[in-house]
Each structure stands twice: as C-alpha cells, then as structure tokens.
Image 1 (cartoon, rainbow, N blue to C red):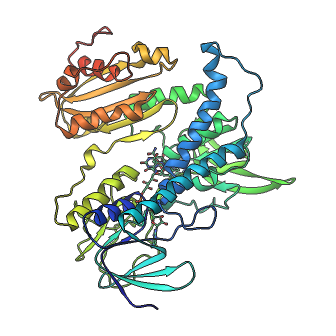
Image 2 (image 1 turned 30 degrees about the vertical axis):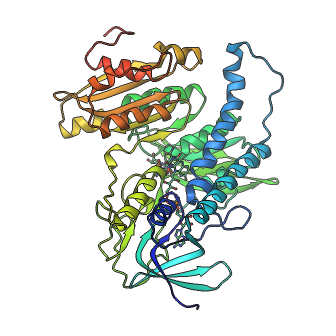
Image 3 (image 1 turned 90 degrees about the vertical axis):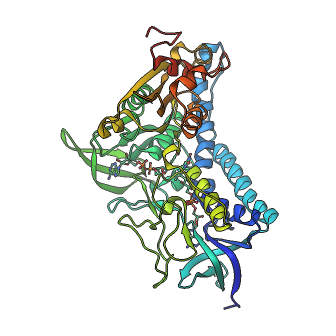
Length: 480
Ligand code: FAD
Ligand code: NAD
C-alpha cells in the first residue's frame, strides 16, 4: 500500500453525476480525485459511467441508425424517394455506436486532464474518516483521504431470479446494444424506458418484438392520454406490447447451433408460453452499493438500497455526499449532472440546489414522449384544481410537412393562478420542446405567459403556443 494521498474532494464514480461533481469542484479550485472501476469494450478504463458506455449515448446512436432505416421503408415513399434493396449492416451500425462511445468516454479523460482532476482507475471503498481505498486494475491499492467524499456509484440492472443474464441470449441493455445480427424474435420483459427504446431499435430493423409488461396499465408514470397515443403508434409499428403479463419462467434451450428462450407467463387469460431467440430483461435498475461501504462509515442505505441523503445530497456524515442514480429521485443522467454540480458548489461554500420537480423526462421512441411536472392523474389525486389545453401536431404545418403528424402537446395550469404545473408531449422532436415547460415552471410562469411568447412559424414549438392558448379556449388553429 502506498502512502495516503490527500484531496479536498474525492469522487467515487465517473458517470454523469460523478464527472460533473469532479470537474465543477476542480473549476472552483478544489484539489479533486475521481475514481472509476469501469472498463470499455476494449478492456481499457472508460470514464463516463452507464450513460456514455452502455446507456444514453449508445442507445441513441442505435435509435438514430434504426430510425434512418425505418424511414427508408415507411416515410421516404411519400416524399417520392425510391430505392432498391435497402440493407442494414448490423456490424457497421454497432461499430459506429462504439466509435461514438469511445469519442465521448475519451472526452471525459481529456476534460479531467484540462481541469486537473486526478483520475484513479479501480474500485473504491469508503472507510471511516473519509478514507477511500482504491483497488486498481493492476492489483495495487492506493489510499485517498478527502476532506469531502462524493459518492456517485450509479446503478446496475435488476436481474430476475429465473432469467439470469448470460450476455448472449438473456441480456440487459449491455447485451442488447451489441447484438451481432437482428434477432428474428426478440422478447422483452418490461415495457419501461429501456424496453421501449431498445425494443424499437430491433423492431425497426426487422425483429418480431414482443414486450411483456407486468402492470395492467401502459406507461403509468406518463400522462394517461400521452401513454394512450404512444401505445396506438407503437401498435401501428408492429410492437406487440402485452400488458398484465407476469413472467414466471425463462428457459434457455439449444436449437441446432443456436439457442432460444422458452418463456412462461400468465395474463388475464391464464398461463401462456412463447419462444424467442433473444430475451432482453428491462425491469428497472438498482443503486450500485455492493462493496462500496466498509463497516463503520455511518452512511445509511434506505429500504431500496439507495444511499440516504437530505435535499442537499448530504448523507449526514461529515463531508460525505451522494449524487445520481445511487440516491432518491429519477434515475436520469441530467438529474445526476445537476446534483454533481450542486454538491461541488455547496462544498465550495456556494449555494447549490436541484429542483426535482422540474426534471424533464424523455423517451426517445418514435414518436418521442416527454414531460415535465405533474400529470392530470397526480393532480386529481392530490385535489389540486387544474385546467388543460391541448394541441395536435396534425394541425401544425411543420409537422405535417415533415410527414410526422402523430401526437399532441398538453399544457396543464392551476385553475385559479394559471401557473404551469406540467407540460406533456408526444410527437416528433418533443425531446427538445419539453424545455419550454421546464423554463416556464422554473420561472413560475403561467399558461398565459407561454401563450404570449412569440414562437417562430413554421416550427413544431407552435404546438406549445396553441396548447397554452387552448388552456383559456382561445387556440387559433382549432375549434375550442
Ligand atoms: P452511472 O452512470 O451508473 O456511473 C457510475 C460509475 O461509477 C460507473 O462508471 C461505475 O463503474 C462507477 N462505480 C460504481 N461503484 C464504484 C466504486 N465503488 N468504485 C469505483 N467506481 C465505481 N438517462 C437519461 O437521462 N437519458 C437517456 O437517454 C438515458 N438512456 C439510458 C439508456 C440505457 C440503456 C440505460 C441503462 C440508462 C439510460 N439512462 C438515461 C440513465 C442514465 O444512464 C443514468 O441515469 C446515469 O448514467 C446515472 O449517472 P450516475 O453518474 O449516477 O451513475
Ligand atoms: P423502468 O422502470 O423504466 O421500466 C421497467 C418496467 O418493467 C416497468 O414498466 C415495470 O412495471 C416492468 N416490470 C418490472 N418487473 C417486471 C416483471 N417481473 N415482469 C414484467 N414487467 C416488469 O426501467 P428500465 O426500462 O429498466 O429503465 C431503468 C431506468 O433507466 C429508467 O427508469 C430510467 O430512469 C433510466 N433510463 C432512462 C432513459 C431515458 O431517459 N430516455 C432511457 C433508458 C433508461
């Protein structure tokens, strides 16, 4: 063991939450170290966490490749564009994705260098007294002492006891981002964000995709009308989503040189069976806390294994903070970004705060789904009086010109104060549009504010303008 090294801030984990905390702390003049255990596909250390290696970025790369392919068969004809024998080279598509991942994981290493963050490559365990022991990949150990320690250990896929990941036939997101060919039949357990996004990728490339969802309701966290519209569009695309389907068995059997998975599940009609070539299990993620905390640190875990923190991401142990997927709140990269920055600023004696009520959600399917704030269901439950205004993309010139008329925008405002309480969207490009809602809510704006803001014509954002006007039944481009 080498001598102990001292830092103002030691960050465990270089995912979105950790690398933001580390870079911001270094910018503020704090001597900062950041430890990460992950290796890339090439076996070399890769910074950036789940998001850059096997999450947000690689999934969006494949979503984009597959969307181009799908559009050739489903949208181009309308524009008068014809072609012969479109083919998808899966190896090329995955290779493109890997190149993007490498560019961005390498980018974090460069940012660390530029900001003078000291990287340590290995597994870190927090001990009493803010000491972090790091087992490096070469087997050596270093000991770091931080005046402050920021835990940003992220999350791992939840595994079902009867469907263990084997990296090939039964996979989580990691395997489903790296299939070497389009599976003929892809089974997915869980119609959540990963199931819908990665299910869409392989569906667009020609797989028969069946998604088994245990809950009787589709996308219960989204606005009910948004979920209904999205479900209708996914059905048109041939995604087979079976609700109320409880899987009890997943047996991998050999079939000639290949393998297949025999699934047993029950739904309202009783026991069912299904055979698929690959199975993606996407039933949620859990905080990564295994091996992270030695005895006696005082850091507590909650009933879901997440690190307990207060509203400032402080663990209650002097100088120990935790951010990102390993603490309460939505498991989203941008939520981790903001928490990382806020904690670094708090450590430096500046104000730092994250408003969890205005964290936007985006599901990158076609159509995209996005929202910020409360749904009608939630407002009804808590008894808040509200009014709504909706506007369909089918009446938006730009959307129709693009051949993408599906979906709508809904503005929800308080019935008495007119303050915007939520913005819910399903349609083309809504991953960008949702930020109008975030801004309005952050500035405590009203539906009338949104309605009085000049929106460029012709743009998709006009749907928000008209939806805001519809809140007071004065939309111009539809009957109120
Ligand atoms: P992570 O990104 O998980 O990073 C934690 C890092 O810490 C990892 O590199 C890990 O190796 C390291 N680590 C853990 N423990 C230790 C230890 N003891 N010692 C050293 N290192 C350690 N979110 C979005 O907002 N938008 C999206 O489009 C999106 N798409 C996604 C798609 C997929 C397929 C998946 C799986 C997730 C997606 N997410 C998306 C979620 C997003 O990836 C996570 O919310 C985000 O990565 C969490 O950031 P984090 O820094 O908390 O943790
Ligand atoms: P999820 O929580 O979004 O969805 C899991 C789904 O699986 C739920 O609908 C749940 O009811 C269902 N389920 C749970 N157990 C089941 C079972 N035994 N059988 C059948 N269905 C079951 O989780 P996910 O899709 O694994 O994604 C994990 C997290 O990663 C997301 O919640 C999100 O925070 C993050 N993520 C975000 C994005 C994005 O922002 N676009 C993309 C991917 C992942």
